[in-house]
View 1 (tube, one colour):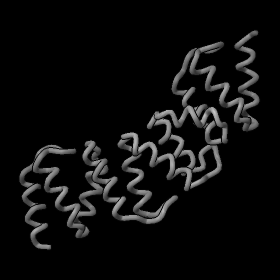
View 2: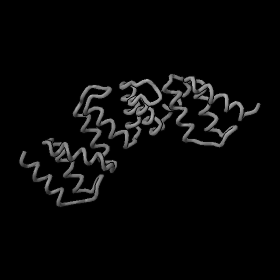
View 3: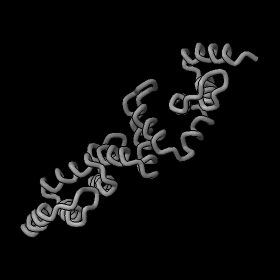
View 4: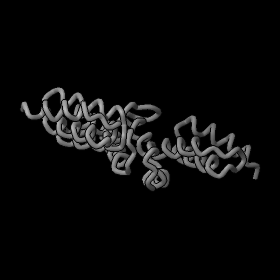
Length: 186
């Protein structure tokens, strides 16, 4: 069997949106059969196949690759290459965040804050913002600071402790003191 020709024809079939062909392209890229191995492209095609409902591809995504899950969430959120589905976007973002992917944690906090794909839940917004900040994500620290500045006493306390202990940011006793003092006013 001429693998290069097979690859060529699977690429043609993919253009029609065939999930099985997407899955097979992913295998080609993953194994480097007939083409040069390219794990990034393999992941892309596994995700496209999973988003198109291919059961084996969905298992590949669910196997625990947090970044793959997050990329799939973004595909669903933006309707990029697949039909937009905010509930599925939320689902995959949450799975990715629970697997420890900081970018997904931050995005999940935003989804809870604005109720995109789920109900608005400010407690969970704060929880995920805090988890992201603990991982050292600068955007999450900014979001936490916004919450603190808007009067959220839990956020004020956490910011004070983060600055005091150097968690998720550089230790800054002046900022820690500021947030402790500000918290006492509430």
